[in-house]
Figure 1 (cartoon, protein in one colour):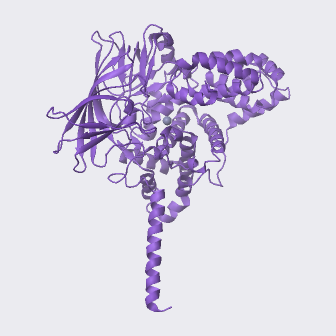
Figure 2 (cartoon, rainbow, N blue to C red):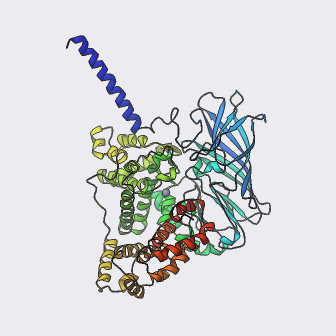
Figure 3 (cartoon, rainbow, N blue to C red):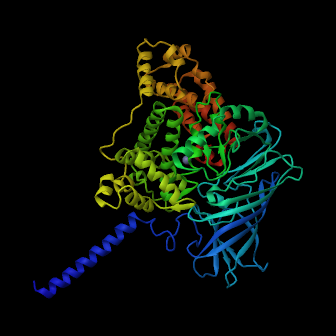
Length: 627
Ligand SMILES: [Zn+2]
């Protein structure tokens, strides 16, 4: 080989290295160049050119027709010169669009795609239009909005409506750049029936109705579209502290206030850990039972399932979770849904820290072990789809809901615990506070998180970054081989009590001392080792069939229905008819479907209950029950 050829080969080799390196970086670090070239996979918007920075909403709620109608004024910031504004929409009927001179603008609405909905392209008038006004109305089937007839509310007198915008449903009630990288402030003027109160994720929520039925709101901090929220119903308010209070239907207000009496204490504990609460008020809105989720962290006003109101404040870790989102998620937001673990992994970590602060380490250990169980079963469900068990997701061409599982929540949590264990809690807390400060009111990518760890925890030392194995946690499937399983003394006790029950030596007093999470573990530990006579014997020791706590009742139903225990059929039907929370509906229906007689009850109950469920729950349950 002569020298000339050697140089040529060397050049080709270098070029090859450069190209392969470029491709592998792009694959891994797709979220990095977020500002100008990066396109959100779930949005049509041209946010790389022009961004909505503020909106003024003026809408009327029409309960009869189940629509919102009116206009939105979108104020624009230009990153590049452009002659179009591209927005996301879903099932919206757009009447007209005008510019800041009230001049009509042309617009084209594409036929809807399955995941992203409608592309709305507005022709701008050539100069830098400061704002555009869109006159529109929503569809009665708008995915974000649930309309509840009076009969299905707690008070039974007035209808109720609420929104759920996460992940990409805001576009079904506002034409908007519906991607978390775009943040904006907003004002709103909402008109409704004067018998109802309107609330939003903004300031302006008032404790009482007014005769005009017109309410005004303002959100002064920039938020992503999925945090826009609205609710209207026969609602009343009770204050808990200067900055915390509860909105609920009048008939359920006092129970709710009692359940969440420690709300202020929770905010104080969170501030001591993560820095000041930056949203002003922190209120809760207790929704009707058909709300399909546990909670939604809408800023200033968490939307909450009533299923955590059990009379003994034992399920308030859910509130700690939604509150923690005031830092992780709302203040520092995932740049795209592929980075979802930045929202949820951080939030589960913060939630458990708040719980540890308020109720001690044994309690937070219990939550951690239960979370680990969920993660293990998620990993086993996804064993044929290993790519879905990376922390950094690939949700292109898919509904982001597909990624909203325990991987982001629990694997994300365990990664942060792993870093904490490696560097010590004091240093990790310093990092957390820095992260929340530095990225306050911004949307961040997974790569920015890694860079911040490199800078703040590793002090720029690559070998230290390597020791943390972040890339392994984030960009490979499952859990690392050397992962240590968490343990909980309280849950181990419950497991031992289950063994004692099975061999007939259990002291019934032990069950009366249990926390609800210990009951759940106890019941799970009996699973598959019991027949109907065992459940009869258990019922005499502790009346699980009458539990008012849906978490405990669901755990008991899952065990007892799977062996066809007849006395579980009525409580199962009763639960399915009175809650709409997917967390309970799915396992109870699945347990019923596992036996022939249960199947008959599942199908007939679903036909009766389906209309009262939220579209999110219906879309999951239709796949199970094929109505
Ligand atoms: Zn969350």
